[in-house]
Amino acid sequence: MNGPEIHVEFAPELGMFVPQARRAGATEVVTDGVSTLGHVVESLGVPLTEVGGLVVDGRAVAVSYVPKAGESVEVQAVARPQRVPGAPLRFLLDVHLGTLARRLRLLGVDAAYESTDIGDPALATRSAAERRVMLSRDRGLLRRRELWAGAFVYSTRTEDQLRDVLGRFEPELKPWTRCTACNGLLKEAVKEDVADRLEGGTQRSYDVFAQCEECGRVYWRGAHHDRLEAIVTRAVSEFGS
Ligand SMILES: [Zn+2]
Image (cartoon, rainbow, N blue to C red; front, side, top):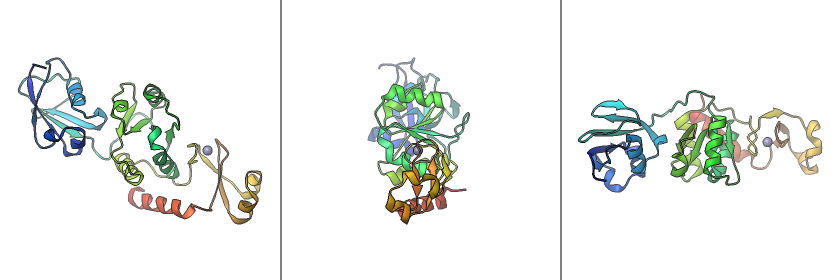
Protein backbone atom coordinates (compact mmCIF):
# COMPACT_ATOMS: atom_id res chain seq x y z
CA MET A 1 0.00 0.00 0.00
CA ASN A 2 1.18 3.46 -0.75
CA GLY A 3 -1.32 5.86 0.75
CA PRO A 4 -1.91 7.98 3.81
CA GLU A 5 0.17 7.25 6.89
CA ILE A 6 -1.71 7.09 10.15
CA HIS A 7 -0.66 6.31 13.70
CA VAL A 8 -2.37 3.46 15.50
CA GLU A 9 -2.16 2.59 19.17
CA PHE A 10 -3.74 -0.54 20.62
CA ALA A 11 -5.03 -1.01 24.17
CA PRO A 12 -2.75 -3.38 26.13
CA GLU A 13 -5.54 -6.03 26.21
CA LEU A 14 -5.33 -6.23 22.41
CA GLY A 15 -1.57 -6.69 22.33
CA MET A 16 -1.81 -10.45 21.86
CA PHE A 17 -3.44 -9.98 18.44
CA VAL A 18 -0.86 -7.67 16.91
CA PRO A 19 2.82 -8.18 16.08
CA GLN A 20 5.27 -7.52 18.94
CA ALA A 21 6.45 -4.27 17.38
CA ARG A 22 2.97 -2.74 17.61
CA ARG A 23 2.30 -3.64 21.25
CA ALA A 24 3.81 -0.61 22.95
CA GLY A 25 2.66 2.85 21.93
CA ALA A 26 1.54 4.20 18.58
CA THR A 27 3.05 2.83 15.39
CA GLU A 28 2.79 3.93 11.81
CA VAL A 29 0.38 2.25 9.41
CA VAL A 30 0.22 2.99 5.71
CA THR A 31 -3.34 2.65 4.44
CA ASP A 32 -4.77 2.65 0.93
CA GLY A 33 -6.84 5.79 1.45
CA VAL A 34 -10.19 4.04 0.88
CA SER A 35 -10.34 1.24 3.44
CA THR A 36 -12.41 1.77 6.55
CA LEU A 37 -10.77 1.91 9.94
CA GLY A 38 -12.56 -1.32 10.84
CA HIS A 39 -10.87 -3.03 7.92
CA VAL A 40 -7.48 -1.57 8.83
CA VAL A 41 -7.77 -2.79 12.42
CA GLU A 42 -8.86 -6.25 11.30
CA SER A 43 -6.04 -6.48 8.79
CA LEU A 44 -3.61 -5.79 11.64
CA GLY A 45 -4.99 -8.90 13.36
CA VAL A 46 -7.54 -7.61 15.86
CA PRO A 47 -11.10 -9.03 15.66
CA LEU A 48 -13.62 -6.20 15.81
CA THR A 49 -15.53 -8.18 18.47
CA GLU A 50 -12.68 -7.23 20.80
CA VAL A 51 -12.71 -3.52 19.98
CA GLY A 52 -14.71 -1.37 22.39
CA GLY A 53 -14.15 1.92 20.62
CA LEU A 54 -12.13 3.75 17.98
CA VAL A 55 -10.91 7.24 18.75
CA VAL A 56 -9.36 9.44 16.04
CA ASP A 57 -7.55 12.57 17.21
CA GLY A 58 -9.61 12.53 20.38
CA ARG A 59 -13.05 11.89 18.90
CA ALA A 60 -14.96 8.61 18.72
CA VAL A 61 -15.59 7.31 15.20
CA ALA A 62 -17.45 4.33 13.73
CA VAL A 63 -15.69 1.34 12.17
CA SER A 64 -16.84 2.70 8.78
CA TYR A 65 -14.65 5.80 9.17
CA VAL A 66 -11.95 6.16 6.51
CA PRO A 67 -8.76 7.48 8.15
CA LYS A 68 -6.87 10.38 6.63
CA ALA A 69 -3.15 11.12 6.50
CA GLY A 70 -1.54 12.06 9.80
CA GLU A 71 -4.43 11.03 12.02
CA SER A 72 -3.83 9.27 15.32
CA VAL A 73 -6.04 6.31 16.09
CA GLU A 74 -6.61 4.79 19.50
CA VAL A 75 -8.05 1.27 19.44
CA GLN A 76 -9.81 0.55 22.74
CA ALA A 77 -10.64 -2.82 24.26
CA VAL A 78 -14.23 -3.82 25.04
CA ALA A 79 -15.55 -2.63 28.38
CA ARG A 80 -16.08 -5.28 31.02
CA PRO A 81 -18.81 -6.07 31.80
CA GLN A 82 -19.92 -5.85 28.19
CA ARG A 83 -23.61 -5.36 27.53
CA VAL A 84 -25.15 -7.03 24.48
CA PRO A 85 -28.49 -5.30 23.93
CA GLY A 86 -31.34 -6.65 21.83
CA ALA A 87 -31.89 -10.16 23.14
CA PRO A 88 -31.57 -12.20 26.32
CA LEU A 89 -27.92 -13.07 26.84
CA ARG A 90 -27.16 -16.48 25.35
CA PHE A 91 -24.17 -18.06 23.73
CA LEU A 92 -23.07 -20.33 20.92
CA LEU A 93 -19.72 -22.10 21.26
CA ASP A 94 -17.60 -23.54 18.50
CA VAL A 95 -16.51 -27.18 18.31
CA HIS A 96 -13.33 -26.60 20.35
CA LEU A 97 -15.13 -25.26 23.41
CA GLY A 98 -17.21 -28.24 24.51
CA THR A 99 -15.88 -28.31 28.07
CA LEU A 100 -16.58 -24.59 28.49
CA ALA A 101 -20.10 -25.13 27.14
CA ARG A 102 -20.78 -27.80 29.78
CA ARG A 103 -19.43 -25.56 32.57
CA LEU A 104 -21.65 -22.67 31.48
CA ARG A 105 -24.68 -24.98 31.38
CA LEU A 106 -23.82 -26.28 34.85
CA LEU A 107 -24.15 -22.67 36.00
CA GLY A 108 -27.47 -22.29 34.18
CA VAL A 109 -26.13 -20.12 31.37
CA ASP A 110 -27.76 -20.75 27.97
CA ALA A 111 -24.85 -22.18 25.96
CA ALA A 112 -25.56 -23.87 22.63
CA TYR A 113 -22.79 -25.98 21.20
CA GLU A 114 -22.27 -28.03 18.06
CA SER A 115 -20.28 -31.14 18.84
CA THR A 116 -19.55 -31.64 15.15
CA ASP A 117 -17.75 -29.08 13.05
CA ILE A 118 -20.60 -27.58 11.01
CA GLY A 119 -18.31 -24.91 9.54
CA ASP A 120 -17.98 -21.18 10.03
CA PRO A 121 -20.84 -20.08 7.74
CA ALA A 122 -23.35 -22.36 9.51
CA LEU A 123 -22.18 -21.23 12.96
CA ALA A 124 -22.43 -17.58 11.99
CA THR A 125 -25.91 -18.15 10.55
CA ARG A 126 -27.05 -19.85 13.76
CA SER A 127 -25.60 -17.03 15.84
CA ALA A 128 -27.66 -14.56 13.80
CA ALA A 129 -30.85 -16.63 13.69
CA GLU A 130 -30.89 -17.30 17.44
CA ARG A 131 -29.23 -14.04 18.50
CA ARG A 132 -26.45 -15.83 20.33
CA VAL A 133 -23.05 -14.41 21.19
CA MET A 134 -20.53 -16.54 19.29
CA LEU A 135 -17.65 -17.65 21.53
CA SER A 136 -14.53 -18.81 19.73
CA ARG A 137 -10.76 -18.69 19.57
CA ASP A 138 -10.96 -18.60 15.77
CA ARG A 139 -10.36 -15.07 14.51
CA GLY A 140 -11.60 -15.98 11.04
CA LEU A 141 -14.97 -17.04 12.45
CA LEU A 142 -15.21 -13.86 14.53
CA ARG A 143 -14.67 -11.77 11.38
CA ARG A 144 -17.85 -13.08 9.77
CA ARG A 145 -20.30 -10.28 9.20
CA GLU A 146 -23.41 -12.42 9.79
CA LEU A 147 -22.61 -12.91 13.49
CA TRP A 148 -25.15 -11.46 15.90
CA ALA A 149 -22.30 -10.78 18.31
CA GLY A 150 -19.06 -12.49 19.11
CA ALA A 151 -16.27 -12.73 21.61
CA PHE A 152 -12.78 -14.11 21.45
CA VAL A 153 -12.03 -16.61 24.23
CA TYR A 154 -8.60 -15.59 25.48
CA SER A 155 -7.35 -18.69 27.28
CA THR A 156 -6.87 -22.32 26.33
CA ARG A 157 -7.57 -23.48 29.92
CA THR A 158 -11.20 -24.19 30.72
CA GLU A 159 -11.05 -22.56 34.17
CA ASP A 160 -9.66 -19.33 32.75
CA GLN A 161 -12.09 -19.44 29.84
CA LEU A 162 -14.99 -19.65 32.28
CA ARG A 163 -13.71 -16.69 34.31
CA ASP A 164 -13.13 -14.75 31.09
CA VAL A 165 -16.71 -15.24 29.87
CA LEU A 166 -18.37 -14.75 33.27
CA GLY A 167 -16.36 -11.60 33.95
CA ARG A 168 -16.91 -10.18 30.50
CA PHE A 169 -20.67 -10.69 30.16
CA GLU A 170 -21.81 -11.22 33.75
CA PRO A 171 -24.59 -13.64 32.79
CA GLU A 172 -27.14 -14.43 35.48
CA LEU A 173 -26.10 -17.64 37.23
CA LYS A 174 -28.74 -20.28 37.97
CA PRO A 175 -26.74 -23.39 38.87
CA TRP A 176 -28.30 -26.84 38.42
CA THR A 177 -31.11 -25.63 36.12
CA ARG A 178 -29.75 -26.73 32.75
CA CYS A 179 -28.76 -30.04 31.18
CA THR A 180 -25.00 -30.15 30.72
CA ALA A 181 -25.43 -32.62 27.87
CA CYS A 182 -27.90 -30.74 25.65
CA ASN A 183 -28.52 -27.26 27.17
CA GLY A 184 -32.19 -28.12 27.85
CA LEU A 185 -33.91 -26.91 31.00
CA LEU A 186 -34.16 -29.25 33.97
CA LYS A 187 -37.34 -30.03 35.84
CA GLU A 188 -37.51 -31.40 39.35
CA ALA A 189 -37.80 -35.15 39.51
CA VAL A 190 -38.06 -37.85 42.12
CA LYS A 191 -36.73 -41.35 41.91
CA GLU A 192 -40.14 -42.94 41.35
CA ASP A 193 -40.74 -40.88 38.19
CA VAL A 194 -37.53 -41.88 36.50
CA ALA A 195 -36.94 -45.39 37.89
CA ASP A 196 -37.02 -46.90 34.40
CA ARG A 197 -34.04 -44.75 33.41
CA LEU A 198 -31.80 -45.76 36.31
CA GLU A 199 -29.50 -48.71 36.79
CA GLY A 200 -30.26 -50.80 39.88
CA GLY A 201 -27.23 -49.55 41.80
CA THR A 202 -28.03 -45.95 41.06
CA GLN A 203 -31.61 -46.45 42.19
CA ARG A 204 -30.53 -47.70 45.57
CA SER A 205 -27.63 -45.35 46.24
CA TYR A 206 -28.43 -41.89 44.97
CA ASP A 207 -31.00 -39.16 45.27
CA VAL A 208 -32.40 -38.11 41.96
CA PHE A 209 -33.10 -34.42 41.74
CA ALA A 210 -33.75 -33.42 38.18
CA GLN A 211 -34.54 -34.50 34.67
CA CYS A 212 -33.90 -32.73 31.37
CA GLU A 213 -37.08 -31.60 29.62
CA GLU A 214 -35.37 -31.96 26.24
CA CYS A 215 -33.37 -35.18 26.28
CA GLY A 216 -34.75 -36.90 29.37
CA ARG A 217 -31.37 -37.30 31.03
CA VAL A 218 -31.65 -37.82 34.77
CA TYR A 219 -29.44 -35.99 37.27
CA TRP A 220 -28.56 -37.30 40.68
CA ARG A 221 -26.05 -36.55 43.41
CA GLY A 222 -23.47 -39.19 42.78
CA ALA A 223 -19.99 -39.61 41.46
CA HIS A 224 -18.51 -36.28 40.26
CA HIS A 225 -21.02 -34.28 42.26
CA ASP A 226 -18.44 -32.87 44.69
CA ARG A 227 -16.22 -31.74 41.84
CA LEU A 228 -19.15 -30.02 40.10
CA GLU A 229 -20.32 -28.51 43.38
CA ALA A 230 -16.86 -26.98 43.83
CA ILE A 231 -16.99 -25.44 40.34
CA VAL A 232 -20.42 -23.98 41.08
CA THR A 233 -19.41 -22.63 44.51
CA ARG A 234 -16.33 -20.94 43.10
CA ALA A 235 -18.19 -19.33 40.20
CA VAL A 236 -21.09 -18.13 42.33
CA SER A 237 -18.82 -16.63 45.00
CA GLU A 238 -16.92 -14.65 42.37
CA PHE A 239 -19.59 -13.84 39.80
CA GLY A 240 -23.00 -14.55 41.37
CA SER A 241 -25.20 -11.60 42.21
ZN1 LIG B 1 -30.72 -32.70 28.03
